[in-house]
Length: 328
Image (cartoon, rainbow, N blue to C red; front, top):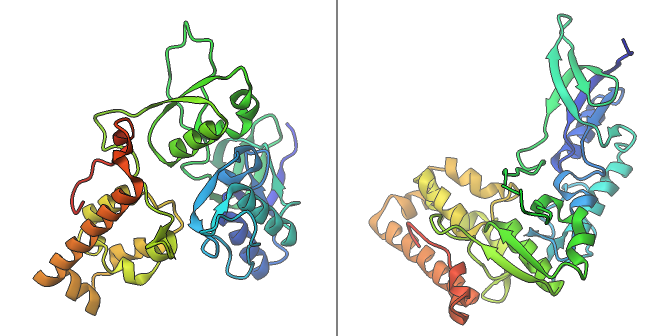
């Protein structure tokens, strides 16, 4: 039987939040033998180098996607300060290098099985490699780290089926002159990003969205009133106080669907779900006038988003209009 490496702490997954967690642990216990495992080919998780492609930006403004003690460089930004995928990838790699995490990371590593031994230690089986034992284990692979692909009948299909997470590794195929037309299935942010990339690459796109759903994500302007960064405003407590989430989880879910801005980064809105006290909550959600004002606020915001998107530009573009419910 092959020898097994032993560690004090093993973390499975290299998503953006994990480097900070590792750094904090090592600052508190600097002699810890810590290891990070990830099946990606580069550091960054969903922002790894192989997942980046042209025109890919995060729906978050500069200053909201960084560790408080480690500022992000002001490069690769849109005029509204939205951050490019390359900038995020570079930031996470710089952080790993500057905090001595690179040597503690094993990439292209897949954990196939986890068991707890009688000794109390965790045993990890590694694909095509020796196993690992550790005293403490954190599984932080995330729900979006690996692409979820459906099974498609392809008996007479000789064209590649590419998941949105594989666009970065499929650039040669997608940008090739031999690729003239591409079918995009779905209506989430990744679909918008992929369609934009393909159109800028001068490809013909057939965009398929099922009719029995609630439609694609709403299109919001990058700036509110042409002045304020939209995501910056959404991250304020002032806007959170208007969220119907404070009185109903269902309405919070509708708000998420309406504006499509919740990607795990705007935590202030999630806090609003639990914030059911305070003067603003009582005035906006516990009085007739407050509720009427709140409903009016969201309806006006919806109208502004529709006006910006200009869905009526063409008959085909009308199909991208969000099927709203609730306050919309």
